[in-house]
Length: 113
Image (tube, rainbow, N blue to C red; front, side, top):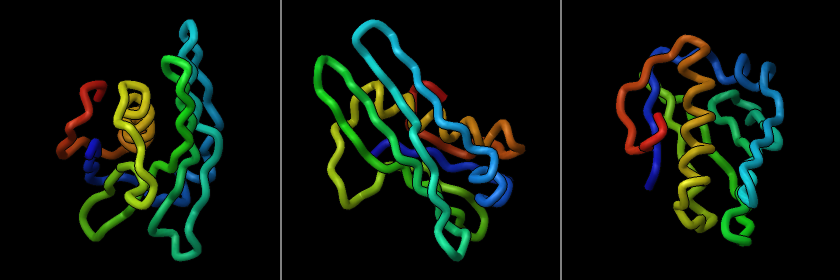
């Protein structure tokens, strides 16, 4: 399962407030971060994502979960997603948002990070 663990990340509410939808198009490939939704207890952020690769469209949620000592970025477990290069790139993009906001990468299995 592709994921990243970030330490020292800011509160998720700060990331949510500063979130801007993003779209990247490279030839026939499309990668979108469409929206962010903050859970009422502010411990989890869901990012609506879309990837189109080789004519296949995948819509999925990226889960950003703040735990006691770290923040984890991963795909939602309840909805199967093929772990393509585009899916991993969007996970890495969300992890970079946390790193750019002051966090540091603890561990990951994402090649683009």
